[in-house]
Length: 256
Image 1 (tube, rainbow, N blue to C red):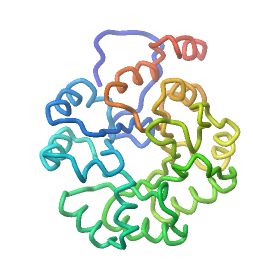
Image 2: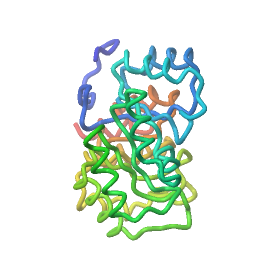
Image 3: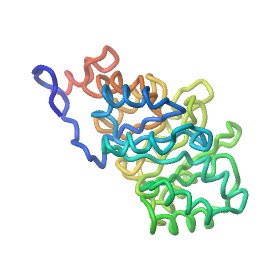
């Protein structure tokens, strides 16, 4: 990636297609024109796009939008809630056919809105991984469901073993459940525990809020995997990753 001018002591970013340092963007219903504008400005910094929850079910011009993203060489997947909507209606085979119909190469398996026996969830991951690259999500969208750290580790490891390329640490679009308190504050002890057992490059941390992005970049580094980034926040996030916004300005200078 070419930058517009030279600055010394800039942290080194991994190069696309990257396995770590991923920025996953959430598209909650961009128009074709908005998608084109987004790609013009932020496509170069975007690694993967999620069509949030089940928005793809009601999005007009879905095939045209998928084509735009494909032409930009950015993988796309349907949000995990869509997978759950099919599963709760006993339509797993229909879901698989839907992935094929739209030429999807990635899929998300989650259980944030419904209860699925974990062994069964891993079977879904295993079956889908024969068809697409699977990203699975751990954590509930229900703020009252709080898992112990050992449970997060157990679930993540089992899903990686079942065939997940990456596991997502749940936070919802608002960044106020799962790995966060309802205030948006990171459950720091939980994250530290997870990282003792699960390699950081296998995890995509949902971090829609700027303070959350800063926290993970300071903890793990420039090339941490971050998800649920709003389209308009991709460029700002890239500057945070490079120590070129006030929030991380001194963090990387002090490492030199």
